Each structure stands twice: as C-alpha cells, then as structure tokens.
Image 1: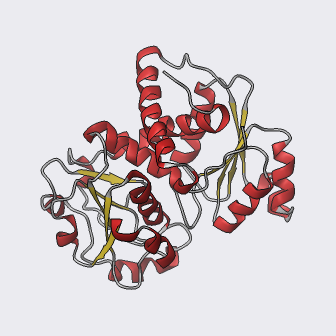
Image 2: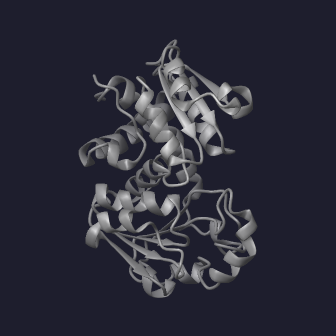
Length: 306
C-alpha cells in the first residue's frame, strides 16, 4: 500500500472519512466493553515531534499507541537535530528508517508538507498554523455519536478565521454540511480555502443571526499560540462574539456546543457555558484518543472490519 499522509481532511476521501468516524466509534465502544485488549501495533513506534506545546494532543497520541500495544516517542526541537538546523528532509528520511509513523505539531504548514514529501512512512498533522484536522475528526465523531449523520446539518463557527476554522471549512466540504462563519471584519479565513468550499460555507457578522436554528455551535480562543501580544486588540475586535447560554438559546433545542480547548472562560465563552448540558467538550476531548486510533490504524493497516 502506498504511503498515505494526513495533513488536511482533504487527504482522505469523503468515504474514507466516514469510515474513520464509524471505526473510531467502534474502537471506543470496544475499549469500554473489553478494555485495551486490541493491540495491533506490537513493537510499532510513533515519533511525535512537538514544536508547539500540547496537552490533549500528546496525551491522546501517546495513550493511543500504548493501548494499541505500541510505543510513542516524544521529540522536541531541543531534543533533536531539527532544533540545530538539520534540514527537514534529512530528518524525515532518517526517522522513516526507524519508526512506523510520525506525528508533527508545528507552526509552518509548508514545513510539514516538506517533511511529508521526504517521508516514506505516514505523517500526521497534529496542528499547524493553517490546519488542525485531527481535532475535526474528534469533533465530527462527537457530533455523529450524539446526533447521527451530520450530512445536511448546519454548524456555526464563531471567532477567528484560524487553523480550526480552516479545518471546519474542509469538514463542511468532506462531510457535506453547511457552515456559517461569524467573524469580525479582517479576521476572515483564507480566501482560497473559503472559495474551494463554494456555497457550503457563508460569512456572517451578527452572531445571533448566525446561530439561528443551527445544529451545532463551536468556537476557539481569540488569540491562538503565537498571537498572545495581540490579546488586547483581539479582545476589543471580538467584543460581542462571546458564546453564551443565551446565544445557544437562539439555535435548535438540541444544539451542541464544541470547543477544542483550552478555553478562556469569560472571553470567547461565558464563565458558565461549559457547565451547560449542551456543551459536550469533555466527550469531544476524550474522542481525540479514539479518532486518532482509527486514523493511525487506517494509515498503517488500511480498513479494518469489526
């Protein structure tokens, strides 16, 4: 089987993505029923390269490999020659001789693409400045678990046109749902990503109008990693876009609220929103483990029945 990478949601077909969601749910149910007895990755190793800090990403990937009977290696720039200027392609070729797959959490998406181009083992995007596709697997898995097929439904993104927003746009394309993006002027997502989605995605300025009759509402911090110096300006620009219980009241009665976390209570969300039963962020966070298990399994073994 030719080496497959997962750099964005567009690297898999819609059918493959639907398979991954159902497989992730099956893996999760099996773990609940039987414990971590399914161990297809004995003696397999995942290299995890982190140039950005992480909680959920590191814990979920490391736990996934452990429960699958394999091993995960944590590598930071200060631990590797990447941090001392070794060319990306050279590192990729070396690691491909030693490990079975590589997960990278970094800044430059172009750097990730350069790494994948030189790698003969699967490369997984665990977040770049442009995309966060693993999070969307967990998000769509959570939405599907709780509400069934997402096809034809309506999701609302409130906030910055950032890497998460870009991945939500790609998800709307691949899973065939409508996405409304509510952002201040000047904070729109990249035009090429937006244009490729066609009429599945629309831009809005009024959050109450955007969430009207929506099936799902989601947001992210106003200042992402590396943008901390913009915090004060962003707080002013995003004033009025805080997601609250009253805002969710404008959506459907069975609306779900997602947040990739960490959340800044009192900023992008009200201080009590995560206590609302419509917020399913803890299940969403936990699903990173199961969705990524399904992804790693697919990249290394292909489709698995059962």
